Structures are given as structure tokens and as C-alpha cells.
Amino acid sequence: MEHISVKKKIDRLIVTHKIEKTEQISTMELDIINKAEIPALLPVHIGRTMTGKEIRFVVQNFMDLRSFLKSDIRFDLFIQIVLQIVDTLLACESHGIRCGNLELSSDLSFYDYGNRQVRLICWPLISLSANSNASSFFMELGSIYTSKGHDSDFRLRYLQFFDSRAKFELDDFKQRLETLLQQWQEENAEGAEQGGKSKPRKPRDIPPTVGLRMASIQRISTQTTIQVSRYPFSIGRKAEFCDYAIEDNPYVSKRHATILLRDGQAYIRDNGSSNGTFLNGKRLQPNTEVELPSGACFRIGNESFVFRAAGG
Image 1 (cartoon, rainbow, N blue to C red):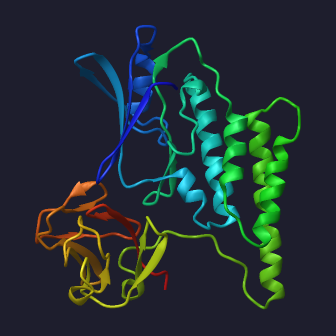
Image 2 (image 1 turned 45 degrees about the horizontal axis):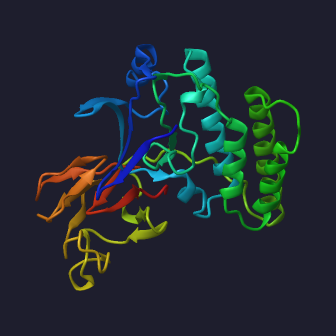
Image 3 (image 1 turned 135 degrees about the vertical axis):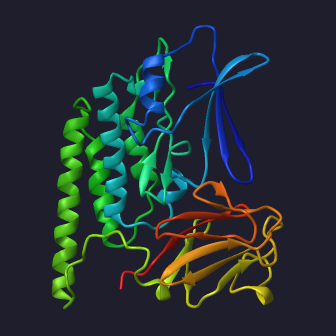
């Protein structure tokens, strides 16, 4: 897609495209997207400007896929992300949405920490150019992904999928991905058994009332995990006033927000900060405690975090 405008603000990313005379909005695709029939597709906003109509996407509390794939994630999570994108493309095909209208770009594809889901932009347009190069996009993701140790061998196996001159088919690609993921899981399970450890368990959702005394928050911008070792746990700009400091950041107040524990449930409170505290994209009222479930994404100034309760 040409003529895209990307504006970065403190709390969000705004992606817009001015609708040209040769383009028309597909009301069918617009309806499918905004009814969330394909959950991975971001909601679409159609607006008017002085020069005509535009399509706009507002992205909040998500990390772009390029940055996420460079953040030292395991190979199984990488494959699960690729599988989510493949499933989204297959869902678009089954709903009659042109895959060529998907914005297949690592900078404009996103990872939703709260729901552990990839989120994609789809332009609901009727246009002459409806072709997408999905193969190149998936190869790009493998090239971006930063792997270490044993996972580097599997990354090479993944990239070898694109050496063939055969026509790229999504169903065939999905089968190969599932086989590769199974091989990774089997080899890692064998290595764990040989080392005298139990097989790795699948991640599970953690009830918000479990393990809160050993909870953690993950700072998205730096991929840093901070243990919440006590309550109340305060976050701000000045180390002398809080438990975790985001120093030299003018958007963060000296004692910006606090995480509390009440009857086994975590809460978050904005301490009357200048730039606000946001929970799952919604700004909190100052000095008001709001329930903080495990997996929730909250933002302090221009820094986003994910809250995790320990598994126990």
C-alpha cells in the first residue's frame, strides 16, 4: 500500500491512508473487519478531511512485530506467531477478503501482549492491485527473528522452506510449520529428560487471585521483567519515591502509579500523575483503585507494561 502516513504519539500509533479517486471502500470487507469476525484484524475508522476521505487505524499498547521478533523469544513462540498470521490469511480467503489488502509489513504488524495475539492491518478497498507476496513476508520474519543456541538451527530449517521454486501454498506452509514446531517440542522435551528435568508444560492462563505475592511486570520497550516483591508497589521517575524507577523520562511523574493487593486481588492506582495511567487503553481516574488482572497491559506516561501473576 502506497501513500501511508504513520504518526507516533505518546500513547498510540496512528496509521492513515488517503482514499484516492481510483479506490473504493469495500463495504463487505469493512463490515467483516469491524464486526471482529476475524479477531486478528484491527478495527477500521473511516474519516473525512478537507481533502477527502481517509482510512485510519489507531494502535495502542502493542509492539511492532519487527521489534518483538528481535527480543530474544523462543522458537516455539516465533512459529506460533507465524501460524497465527497464516490462519488470518486463510480466514480472509474464506470470508472473501482479498489478502492483497493486508498490510504485510513487520513494522506495521503488531503483537498484543495482553491477548498473546498478532494484530494486522487490512485496508478494506476495491483496487486493481490485489496481489500479496505472503512468501516474501514470511521469509522476512524469519530473517528478522533473533535466535540463540539450539533455536538457531531451527531458524535455518524455517528459512529453507523458501528455497524451493514450487508455488507457495498457505495450506502446505501451515503443515510444514506444524511439523517443525512438533520437532522442536520433541527435541526440547528429550533434552529436558536427559538433564533430569520434567518436560516443559504448555503455558496456562493464571487466575488473577493466584500467586500475586510473586507477581511481575514486563516493561515492553526494554523487554525487562521486574518482580513485584511487595505491596504496595509504586512506579515512577524518582528512585527515592518508588519501587521501580523509569529515570530521565519527562512523561513519567516522580511517583506515577501504584500496584496494590486487596483480598488476594491486584489493583492499580494512578497517583494523580500529569500524563495519566492507562489500563488496556482506558485512562484511569486519579487516585482510584482499579482491578488489575493477570495479562493486563497498562501504560504509565509513554511506557507500557504487562502484569503477570505467578503460576504457583
